[in-house]
Image 1: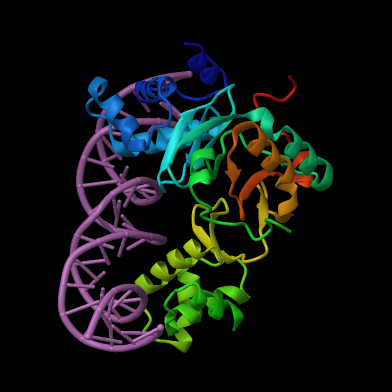
Image 2: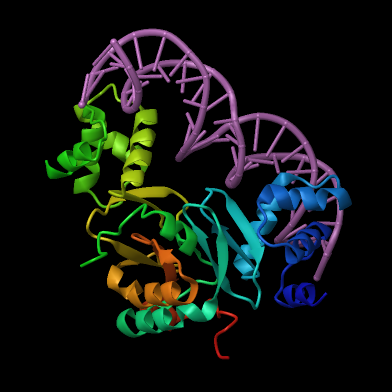
Length: 147
Length: 147
DNA sequence: ATCTCTGCAAACCGTTTGCAAGGGA
DNA sequence: TCCCTTGCAAACGGTTTGCAGAGAT
């Protein structure tokens, strides 16, 4: 598995636990720490929740996995190596769409030009109102709308 | 106090506790729930933490207050009525700058045009690397950099 | 008078930590 | 061998909840 080799090459110590967590998260979309545990346990019954948390923290640092709050107040993890993208969730109905990272290119450029910062955003959780819900009602007007 | 009148007009029930929390948060920048409690207690000793949480939740729903995680893993609250803005935090040194909401205008327009969603983002927490830290080192390269 | 909000206290729950044993490199 | 990682269990800490009484409209 190439990802594992890459990690070993980067000087990280690989354990069965780490490989299993990585494998579990690679195939899935967004998973909570508990869901990762549920997916690993069948293959490695004695694995501990603390290990899951420590491993997810480690994967976050390697950049392979992103941690995000998609609005329901719980942290979800997703394997994003090489595929940065973002999520836009409807605050009314919860519908979720995926946004390509290219959408942020202009913003990145402006922030770099005007402030010198390099934006680091591989997996953002954005919120708004979807077309259907907007048609149904106007639940909120931003203070700047209609200026 | 105009904000209070506006809330009453909107049909909300005003209590001394709510007014004190509102007052406390209006004058401050980012405050945690605990910090709000600390600021209110001197003037209203018997106030309870649960009330703070319930009141902040209420203020969030009115749109007067935003809740954000600025990267240290704890929720902070800020009075943003009429002044949407965003924060960009350096992942290396922690330096923080404020971004005007106008910076998101182009993104908002694209999201609306291409996906039909109305982006709701009055107070985002963004992350990146500040000019000084970037000069010192290159801690991370996004998978899409250098394409 | 009505219905919401508050205080209290307990529970909650996801997450973290200290420590000794286990196991990669 | 050395040092990092794991399992265990306990603690943690911010947040939420049920309930009875207080209070706003």
